[in-house]
Image 1 (cartoon, rainbow, N blue to C red):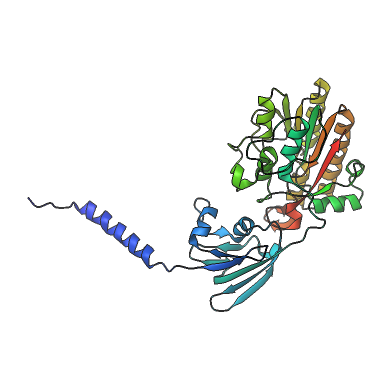
Image 2 (cartoon, helix red, strand yellow):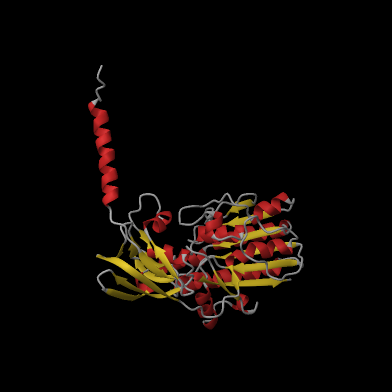
Length: 379
């Protein structure tokens, strides 16, 4: 008896053959990317695939630049297969330069079959002295604890402390700090002396940076690589402290910017309806201190970030938020017990934009977004 295929089966076989034929006819491509150390990296379709999110038809060129070792980019030079060249300042094109799986780099409405990509690394204002991944190892060392498993950061040379306070100043980047200092907006922070020039991690955004603060690790380790993720399976500083029997408390704003696993946390909200959560964060932080300083205490002020997004960096409303946060820092420091290590840090900075209703944003390999101030104070 002859075997007869059902029409549906023949259709599926035909479709699969067509897919294989199309895939086989897709021309292979290669491009060359110069790394920061001057070595060359071959880029292919397989290089790009891990940098794609679901439902993306192109990935930001910046993602590949970070993986290749760039933390700051000043400008970029492209040459396509026809010899056409493009050179641009990075802050002008970071939002719009995308790399497609067929090898084309698109910039606006123009596509280039790229052969060579040569970024030019940016230069920080001051030599970078501390990375955001160093915060957790430093706090752990002060408390006599091991660093979180997987930490890639290094502990600063600090003495033992009974308590650690992590003061989180959202979006108060290093360049904005220097401007605020010159404008006399931060008397309490300026009284602490010069911060360490620091570097955050890419993407310079709150969730990714929070993961790096808590784990002491880079995104390839903790897994929070792009926006939208707010938790990690990697061990955190809170996990280590809690396992050691230490008391861990956290005060946040309207909602959790990142999972506070193994911390007793308080959401402050805007209880008085004045458009800011920072006054409520301060009130809740002082309530914790009145009840007794915990072993590890996390306090997150969001107001500079909120005002920067809405009004832009340098706007009067953003300046007012900086003044308010600076005053809050002074109030908290005055209430701390002795034998406390204080680490004050930002997660990222902010640059001016015109994106709908937003006049400020962050997320690129540029100094205003990537450079952060970090104060390490032993009391």
